[in-house]
Length: 173
Image (tube, rainbow, N blue to C red; front, side, top):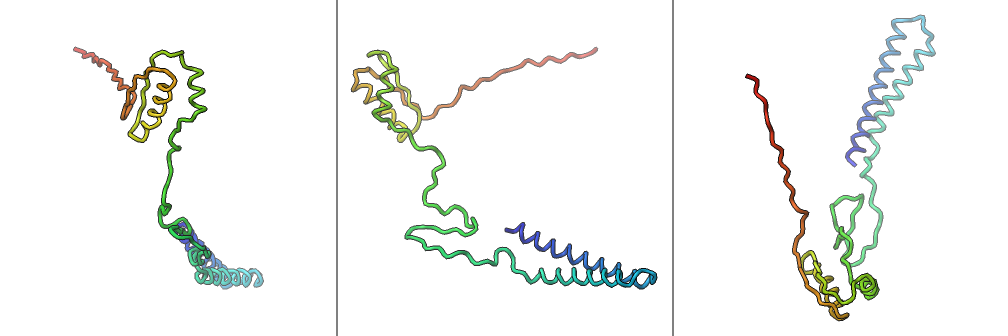
């Protein structure tokens, strides 16, 4: 909104300067060069005065933020923001996708790709809430006759690889 107001003031000034320029130039032309058609001189002078009047009139227009906000009927516990001003006012903001859920259909698909009754190592990554999906998978596999070796990992990062280069310099003697 601030950019709109600044642009409004800049247009106002530009029109005003153009009006002053036209008024002075054509006023001087009428006096200095009497051979110029009087109609052209007076038309330029009138146009300059018109631009000055327009610039003055623009100053009386309300800014873009002078409009009243629309009427909104809010329910209890709701928040209202007009013109995207006021920051975040929502109760809950979900940025990440929803947590995974273990469904019976997912269990069927999992069993179709598993070797028959071999021991399974199950690695789960995340905090307590994230581990609940791993708990569901572990219970499902154990209920279907698998031996499950569970490894819970709190945080997992890619391995750190350090590559070194030997720098040699030649010295001229």
